[in-house]
Image (cartoon, rainbow, N blue to C red; front, side, top):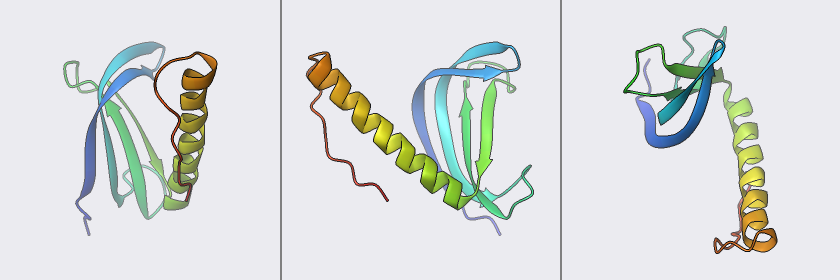
Length: 101
């Protein structure tokens, strides 16, 4: 059964497809049954650029446990990066407390 759990956000960055890199415009996070991984329901991360051909995308399918571990790693890296920007480089973005699941 489809879950209809989908989040779409603008994304600024680059993704690699084969030997080529392309600019990103959006990221889609969804929870649904796997399309490619031999798993049940998965978190899918799909990075794309709507202005380019349909193949301009990079996607992964993760178990819910792997997605939670990735979220925690992202939160730690973001907190450290914000500290680096604010304290070490003197930029104005203040560090914030992050709740890690």
